[in-house]
Image (cartoon, rainbow, N blue to C red; front, side):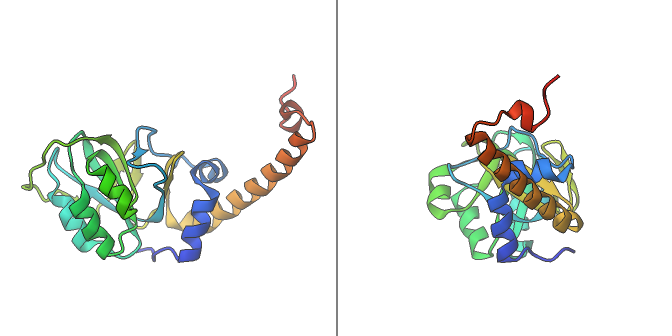
Length: 206
């Protein structure tokens, strides 16, 4: 299993941002744009703990919090169901175990308390509908979430632009490519401010 990201790695990935990581990686690593932050300013970086639920049953999330290792992000196939899979109680429990955040193809609630706690959540819905607690689902097995397969230990980064997930073995490669892209774009931006046209800089003239 991949080790947790260091604080320095998490900080750099967040600074690079999902758009740059996605473009620089050349990988199909973007999760569907329907995943949005549950509160403004939410962002996260960590390694994935995949979870699969039955529709409108959040027992697997309670099990996942108990199993999660520090720095892991719960990446949940909630079957796209708009119900309150996650709220304040689970967020407090997750913070006590140093869980890095939640990405769920499904609904969450208690968005105000989530923001006050600073617990980063990305979901496809916000909903108050209740959930059952009958089906253990699966915790730790690869899942498909928002159009991408995610396995335990994959690197997950999420911010206002979206969510990306890629294999941990590609981390150094993706970071190097992202750093190079940032440096190149910084040079382009300086030239654009000086009057250069994007048509010329990117070779778009025909």
